[in-house]
Image 1 (cartoon, one colour):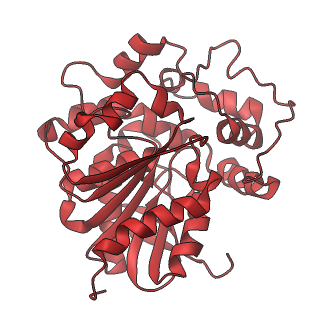
Image 2 (tube, one colour):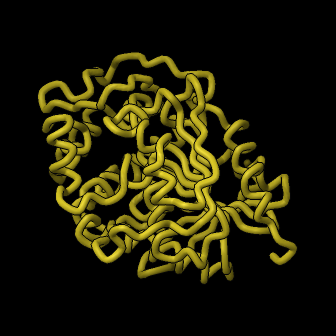
Length: 325
């Protein structure tokens, strides 16, 4: 871990904190919520040892990167723009791309907007827009409300300041523990009166793959940056729906592999399994070569099963390696 280099890259009008390790063809790792570059620490160590240049930014709004205040500064166009600027600043033409959670959504969109900058993609947990491509009629938040009610966590995240106040009441450490340790596949609900139903002083046992030191690292960064930046990704969902109209129906023309745990909440959204395992996913991503469903694995699979995920990534991207760096 001490060999990982940290730098600040100015791109698209903001500063991004970037962690980097290794030499060779570049792999870009994109994290989700409530995560940081740190979620990819195991994959960075494993794949850099196999001859790759591993790069993991804190996305805008997270960790040591800048945190624009307005939700409309968190559209997929903004975040993909950050990454294109990052490539140019680092002198990178094309990357192997790996995403998780919100990072997966950004990765799909990077491949949609700029397939010329991606050699191959390994995405995890989120298949396109939650579980199917852009709905041409219903906005995302309206769709979630109709499926799960106003108490669905994504809907609760929409009001600026509300979730931030609740997470402050819990503490950053307790918030991280609640998100990372859940294995409940039911839709996450966050009613106003009860929240997630876990008191701030409730002792949450940690799984073997998550240490108190890990939790403290995440919490220290969210104590500094706050949760607003990460929550603004959810608050931009309807804006993304509006901005991506020109790409409606466009296929993703990048070789891809998709991995999800069978205890992941995204796998249990109505229609998700049918989409992921049926013909719909393949129609939208014609070069999708494999869908892997990991048994007994929940949402934060990159940390829960780090060795397996590293192997899945390597076994896929090595087919697209070239002699040119």
